[in-house]
Image 1 (cartoon, rainbow, N blue to C red):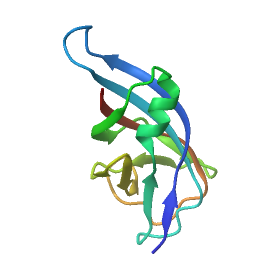
Image 2: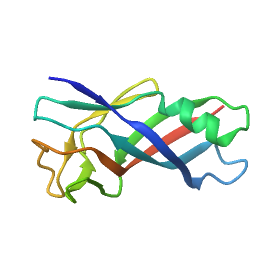
Image 3: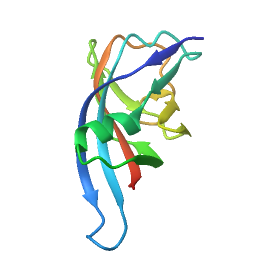
Image 4: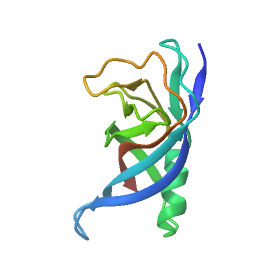
Length: 124
């Protein structure tokens, strides 16, 4: 079993609460991964809060509240790669499996890029 850590290659704001109605925002993070070699592997996107803070550059602290699978990426063999729907949150770190469209965990994948992850945060 190995941890396959993501490289966060993009951060895009999808939605923000109206001014004066809270500080919740929704982001799309684009991820790349090294080879995923077996069903015992676990993928991680570390310091998502820091990546979002750095992209926003507004001096506010970001707290991760929720996460969900986003658009498919692909591996170097052309296989579609998704973040699985079961995502564990610990501070700014997210842990999940990589999966096919039907939610079956990948048993093997070459290096992947463009894998989407939706992250909901609160700013303070």
